[in-house]
Amino acid sequence: MTTHLPLLDIRNLTKSYGAVKAVNDVSLHIDRGEIAGLIGPNGSGKSTFFDCSTGLARPDTGTVVLDGQDITGWSLNRIAREGRMLRSFQKTVTFRSLDVEENLIIAGQMFTFPSILSTFSIGKLSRQRIAGLRERARELIRMAGLWDVRHQPAGNLSGGQQKLIQFASMLMPEPKLILLDEPMAGINPKIIERVVETILYANKSLGVSFLVIEHNIDVVTSICRRVIVLDQGQKLAEGLPQDIIQDQRVREAYLGG
Amino acid sequence: MSLTQTSERARRRDYRIPLGILLFSVALAAPFIGSRYVVHALIIALVFMLPAHGLNLLVGYTGLLSLAQAAFFGIGAYTAGLLAIGYGTPFYVNAVVAGLAAGAVALPLGVPALRLRSTSFVMCTLGFVIIGQAIAKNWISVTRGDMGLSGIPKPYFELGPLSFTVGGTTGFYYLALAIGILATLAVFAVVRSPAGRNMVAIRENETLAESLGVPTWHYKLIVFMLSAVFAGVGGSLYAHYLTVVSPLTFQMYYSTTMLIIVLGGGAGMISGTIFGSLLFVGLTEALRITPELRMIAYGLCLLVLVFWFKQGFAPVINRVWNAIGGAK
Image: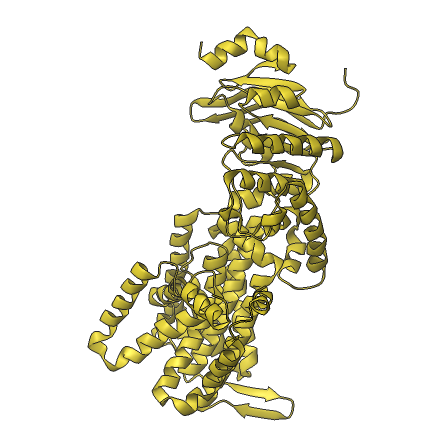
């Protein structure tokens, strides 16, 4: 069917916490340029699946292949740095005492072992790289509509604005793939629109692929081409969003039937 | 950033530069103004300011609570003492080697310790101090055990044809002041560098920093080693000033003093560490006059701190400083 490799190919991922199989033998793939949705009732293993895919947790079994490279067991920061696969967290998190611009600069640096020594203000390397990052950060800040507050500490801003900071931060290192964990949770409709716009812009203009966990079904149907449903740690269904919401099994899972 | 602010609202005059010059002059003139005893207290404050600066990088900026600072302080003191007694090396060699030795020991200690989570890490660093003391007591062929090292010579310098010995309290005060200023500038450079920003990011949210590609583990290890270097240099000053080093240099009391300086002064603020070392070390030294009241006064000071200055004194200092600068 597909002649080229998928961008992200996860095979038979399993993760248990004690006797509970949080994720049970789930396989899925994300194609280049795709926005896919991951839905399921609370406790169905969506976040655990994210954690295991991005290196925050180690899967018991299964493989994660990103862009043809096996990244199973890599640490969170290595996957972000070398794999250019980034993730957001369910709870909105920013570096609260740092201003918006600094929040974004941190995300773009991608220093690794010997070169992190240069960040202790030894040598020109880091200074040049930081100057370039500041440019890029300003572009993204303008795009996210945060220009007027760019020198405010992130902790002083509203939840919605912090969500935008988080989102803009993930675009800093020119990612290939972004995993979003409930990006619309707890923000007002105006910001929802803005986040949707930003996702679509990043997808079309910057070529970023997405896997989105989301409960807001309107958002899912409007941006996702394909939806995967998890229930009790297992893959329940996969398909077009309009088919999925009609699916009897999915409705039962959501209603606890 | 504050410079532009003040030029915008130039209604009130900026007295910060004259005040800075005044404070610096007072620091320079201290041996001639104060009594010998005051100068001695200032020297002790400056000696402890070094490990406190290092600890501030670790606790205040990176968010890692460590009690190991006294261990590195002791390693620095023993290194400098042994070099000075055994080889008669100049002071700057002793200080540099003491710093490097402490930093080098921090590497194998940091690798396992930094894998631990918050409270376990604190307990582990506490262990380093106890082990350090045990080694100092029992490795008699090198450390002379409980007798310690005595008769450590006064710091001496060799600059080309010129060589001189820093004898006397006044001379040592200027030496400690110079090293204190250098250390403060070094901390300032680290904090203002991109690494300083990453350290704050790790303190605020380590998982987020990691998810954005920051190699948090490497940063924590480097800062742990860096804090040990500061402690080691401080230890070398301590050894040369007191001319005696004993296993008691490795004691929890020193670690907690350094921690109180950082937290009481204001974690994550350089002015806090400077003020904290003057206040807490200077105070305990000054209160030696009334031994009965000494610990009570010290304890009261800590209570005031905990109840009224939860962030330490630095925010207050910064507010006063900005007010002097003409900002509201």
